Image (cartoon, rainbow over all chains, first blue to last red; front, top):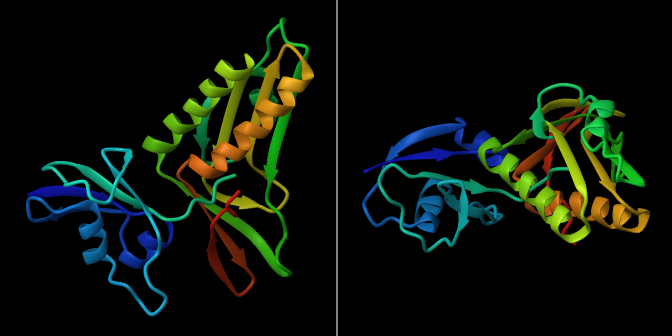
Length: 78
Length: 136
């Protein structure tokens, strides 16, 4: 199934794109998708808030077809 | 007025957005690009946002301040490159009395830093780094 994934800040730079459409297995959770896209490096993984359809959601949330998902790295506004 | 803008913020315009003849107090808070971080020279800042989440979250913060203090709140945050000395965010707050105005202004900037999906990159003479807001 297809999902739209958005990347910001250091995750955008690491991935090399701001957004993309991905084909994923039904039942994939937000946390599982993040772990597969951003394997842990020597310093571990950037802590993120998961979002599904523009709402912060638990990592255990299953992704549905057509969802817009994102992973928000620590915020720096202001 | 709740907005993300790519370019200089019209500070007077943000202030005018909270005009109300019933208000006895107005505060305009500017978060400004600073030239150093922990001793390292910063030459500019770059902001990016998740606009579809950031604008509604800024609106919720303004609505909360309205409900709690009767405040009218305008918030404008920049995206893109911000020069040192320029405001990256401007928050205007108007209330009937001053005590509530200070509280609502502090609330708005503190909650923005915690909740609004905006990211900041510090540009140095010899590199750059994404900087997260300190917790608390």
